Image 1 (spheres, rainbow over the protein chains, first blue to last red):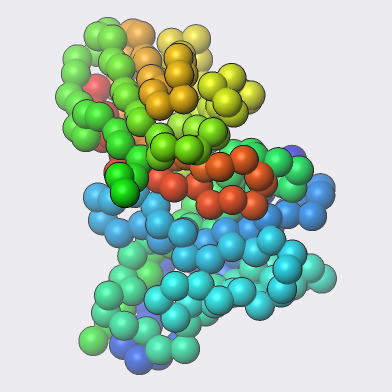
Image 2: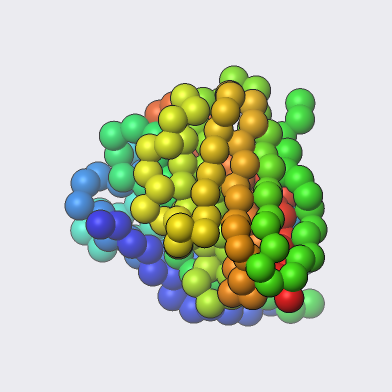
Length: 114
Length: 114
C-alpha cells in the first residue's frame, strides 16, 4: 500500500518569501512522485514529477522539489512567492510498474500575504 | 488541442435520481481515471481503465456506482440511486501508458445531491 502525508493543511507566506510545502510518502516499491496545483474551481495541473532520473526536479512557475529516499520526502519549494501562487497544492504517489492511479495527499492551501 | 472534456460541469439532482457523468479523454491517451474530491476525504481514485478495460475498481464506493468505457474516446460514471453523501467534484483524467506519465485532468463535474 502507498500513502502520502502533507504536513500543514494551510501555509501562509509573504510575497517574495520562500515557499516550502512538505510531503512524505510511503511505498513498498520505488515510487513515482508528483506535485499538482489546483486553482479555485479548476482541475489539477502538473507542477513537476520525479521519475528516478534526478533527485532534484524542476517544474513550472519556478517550483522545484527534491527527492530524499532516506527521509521518504519530496518537499516542494520556490525561492520567492508571488501572489499568483495562491492555490491548493497536492502531492501524489504512484507505484512503479505501469499506468496506475495516483494516491493523493490531503492538500496544502498556500496563502500569499502582500 | 482540446484537453480532457467533462460534462456536465455542474449537476444538481434529488436523492434517488440517476446521475451520469461523462468524460472524453485526450486523443491518443489510452489510460483513463475517475477521481472524486470531497472536503472530508480529499482526492480519491475511483476506477481506472487501460485500453478501455477496467483495471482497478477497488475505489468505487458502492454498487450504486458504475463506470464504463465503450470506446477510446468516451467514458461514463453512473450513480444510481444518488444520495446526498455523493455530493462532490468528480474529475476525469487521462494519460498515455507508462507509470510516470502525466495524468491530464479535466475541469471536473460538481455534483450536488439534495
